[in-house]
Image 1: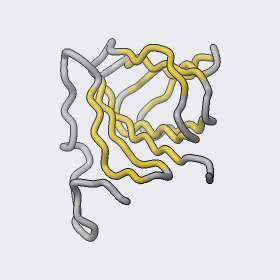
Image 2: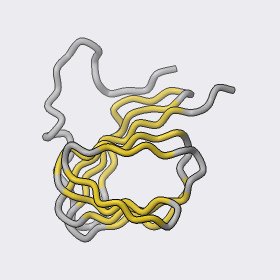
Image 3: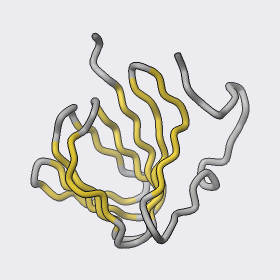
Image 4: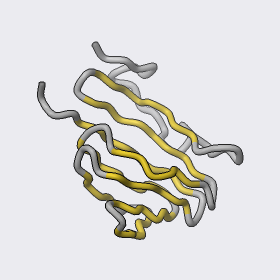
Length: 111
């Protein structure tokens, strides 16, 4: 079953969905189902997500700003317009070098 607060066929401004929060990284689900989903993340400069495991196959797309993405102990600097793919179960962390926004696409392996 698809979970979303958005209507199919409607147009939405991506940039205004999340504005960032000084207290913590913001997450907003666009839609999700049993196979994965699409979420938005907003970071303020200096905010981090500590090392954790990817819950699915993942694509990270930076829409704004710059982040340092550490995957399996290798650092990658991603800028607006860059994207990266990551496999399920891979340890990774994220640190915003500037205010930044990302689109996170998760796809789970078939059951």
